[in-house]
Length: 175
Image (cartoon, rainbow, N blue to C red; front, side):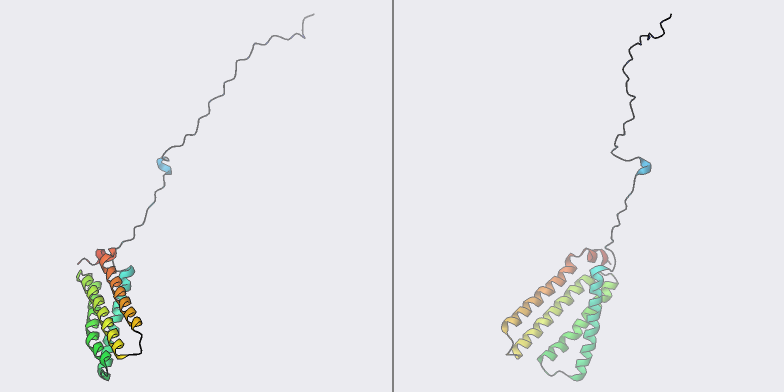
């Protein structure tokens, strides 16, 4: 009888080597078709916008106000020292503010100088008016009057400072 139940010796199997899978490597840059481009919008400082537009509107309103009130006071007459000071300064301020508005709208370099001169003239008017009121009104506290003068000078200086350091003013007022 043949040996049917005998098993045949099996040759030892060779160790199975795992098949190398492709390794995903991170690339420093994505492939060209997958690159995303970002566009950064740069706000232009050229033109009448931002704070320069604010000052244009303020100067226009101030010019119209000084013109109207000058003619109103001229019609009613000056009754005290404050009114006389106003009649002196109002036409100068009206012309200064309106001229500045026109020059800013035309983008003239001279507008910067006109704006600073008009703000300076306005500051001088407020100082003169405050001193007249302090002299005429003996019940007013001297400290309050001096504080108002100092505040007026600081505010005028800060307004002028805008026209000195503003990038928009430098980029816009070029003609």
